Image 1 (cartoon, rainbow, N blue to C red):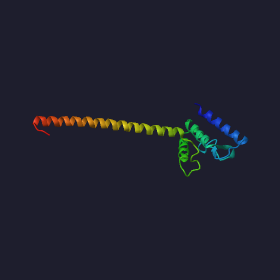
Image 2 (cartoon, one colour):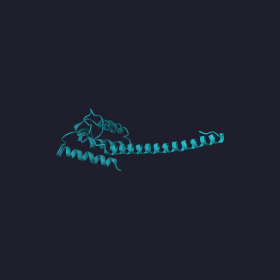
Image 3 (cartoon, rainbow, N blue to C red):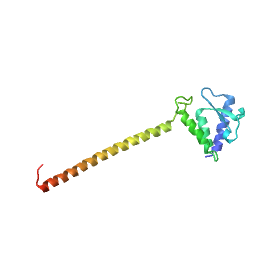
Image 4 (cartoon, rainbow, N blue to C red):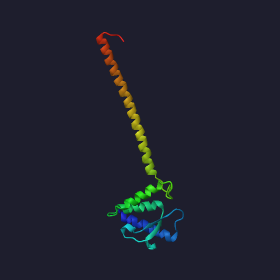
Length: 145
């Protein structure tokens, strides 16, 4: 995947939208050339993005060689969307993450249920073996129970 080409296309689309039909509602300012890469706060270097676009922009930047520092921005955005006091809260749907969490919880419940059944069977077998052993000892000693 050519991350630079996708990032350029995203920025071009956002710039075009900014001049033709600006975003209404929640939006975030993004440095086209991030300050960490030598960008400035010049208005020509700033663009309005939706939260999802902002996250995708930083993901694309993070995947480009030499921009590993952008992962901190990605993490900050993701954590901020889960913070209830943040204006970003609830703006992103974490459906994929929710599905993974639900699937993990279901698998864990299933594994626990399997373990419990196996442990119950094991304990029942162990009890039967112990009972047989005790009966054998009583029979060998000629004692009645």
